[in-house]
Amino acid sequence: MTLSATLAELVRDFRANGRIVIVGASLAGLRGAEALRAGGFSGSLTIIGDEPYEPYDRPPLSKQVLKGWVPADHTLLPRARELDARWRLGVAATGLDRAAKQVHLANGEQVPYDRLLIATGTRARQWPNPAEAALEGVLSLRTRDDAARLQQALAARPSRVLVIGGGFIGSEVASVCRELDIPVTLTERGPAPLVGALGGVIGEIAAEMQRDHGVDLRCGVSVSSLEGDAAGHVRRARLSDGTTVEADVVLAALGSIRNVEWLQGSGLAAGFWGGRVRRRRPGVRHQRRGDRQRLRGGRRGARATRVVRVPVPRDGALGQRRPRRRGGGPQHGQPRTALPSASAAARLLVRPVRRQHQVRRRAAVR
Ligand SMILES: Cc1cc2nc3c(=O)[nH]c(=O)nc-3n(C[C@H](O)[C@H](O)[C@H](O)COP(=O)(O)OP(=O)(O)OC[C@H]3O[C@@H](n4cnc5c(N)ncnc54)[C@H](O)[C@@H]3O)c2cc1C
Image (tube, rainbow, N blue to C red; front, top):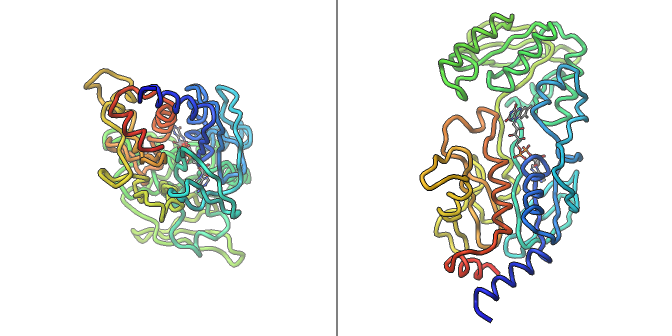
C-alpha cells in the first residue's frame, strides 16, 4: 500500500472512530460540532460546557430579553442538524494534559481525546473592587442568568440605572433603559461611546443620539467608587470629576476577558489575547498559509478580514488567535473571532489530506 493510501485509510478510520472533544458549549462550540458532522466526522463527539444550559444566543440578552419581550431561557440557538454528541454541561474544564491527551474536569474526571477544539470564549470583566462588586444591584451582563437578573432589576423600576462603560453592551442597555422610560446615566472614559469599536465620527453621532433620547451621558470621566446603604444595596457612585450619581442599579459594562486560565500549564501559549501556539515550537505547528487562504473562502490575495489564523499544534489541540483587525479585544466586549475560526478549525479536523508535505506533517501527529 502506498503512503497516501495508508494515510487516506487513517483519515477514514479517524472520521469513523476518532474522539473529538469540544470545550465551550456556546455559539462557536455548537457550530464547530455541526461543521464536524457536516464534514463527515461520525466518531465520538463530546461537548463540555461550564454553564448548565445548552448553547444559547447572547445578542438577545441585551435587547429583547431586557425589554421583557423574550424570557432569558427562550434564547437557545437553533440547531442546523442532529449532533449525536455527548453533552457534559455544568462542569468546567480545569486543565489540559496534552501528553496524555486528556481534558481535566472540575469534578475530577478526565475526558480523553484524539483531537480537541477550544471554544471557551470570554467572560464579563467584573467591577474591580470586590467589596463594591458584591453590593446588591451591581451587575454585569454576559450570561443568560446575568440577563435574567438585570431584567428583573429593570422591571422593578429603579430610580436610576448607572451604566459604566460605553461600548456595545453599555450603549444597548442604556438604550433599553430609555425605551422603558427608566432614567439612566452612562459613564465612558473615552471622548464618546463606541469610539473604541467604531471610531470618533460614529462615536460622536452615537453620543448625540443617546443625549437626544434622554441618556445622561458623561464622557471623559470614570467611576472612582461605588457606595452602598446599610442593607448592602448600591446607592451612589463617585466619579473622577468629583461629581456623584445616585443610582440603585449599576451595570459594569467593562468588556470581556478570555477564558484561558484552564490552559495554564498545558504548554499552549494562552494569555490575555487568547490561545496561541508559537512558531517552531517542538511538536507544534501553525496552520499553513494555504489553509488560511482557503479558510478565508476567497481567491489568492483576498482581504483577510473575517477569519483568523487557527494555530494547529501537532497533538491535535486547536486554539484561537487574535485577529489582526483593529477594534476587537477585551475592552470592547465584542470578540469577533470565535464562530469563523471554530468552524474553520472543525472543518480542518476532517479535511482530507491533499498535499504530500501536509501528509508527512499529519503523519507525524498520529
Ligand atoms: C449581552 C451580549 C450581547 C451581544 N450582542 C451581540 C450582537 O448584537 N452582535 C454580535 O455579533 N455579537 C454580540 N455579542 C457577542 C457574541 O455573543 C459573542 O461573539 C459570542 O457569544 C461568542 O461565542 P463563543 O462561542 O466564541 O464564546 P462564548 O459565547 O463566550 O462561549 C464560551 C462558552 O465556553 C464556556 N466556558 C468557558 N470556560 C470554560 C471551561 N473552562 N470549561 C467549560 N466551558 C467553559 C463559557 O461559559 C461559555 O458558555 C453579544 C454578547 C453579549 C454577552
